[in-house]
Length: 157
Image 1: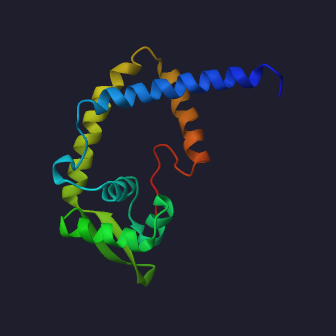
Image 2: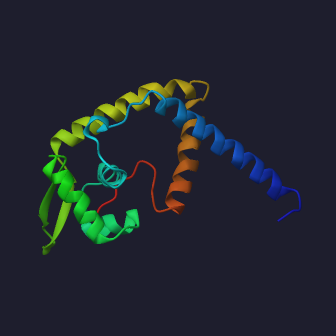
């Protein structure tokens, strides 16, 4: 790589990350996020987040994506099931395995949050054309895919 290209890349990358952080910080200062009033711990929130991006996941898949033990996932899932936020069903592909999904009540809360988030953040992108928004999506999809988290995609398993 050319001598001056890497420092310039790092400078632009730092500025892009800072801009992304500013967007999320501005929204977060409003103090709104799903399940806020339920007093959930970080591990439980992480389980709910992963489930909101999937059609259901097994305990092992949740443990892998969250990089925690299956036992820790099971403990979080048990508490979330007691709270009425997740459902645990037999995996149709393997009767010994279980699939964890959000309940209808949890989906309603996630959907309300996502709509509010998009409504609050979308005006920040008004200066971009449809082509530029598509390019932004494409680039973020590349970053997500490189990290096992495709933009706009749902995980299964």
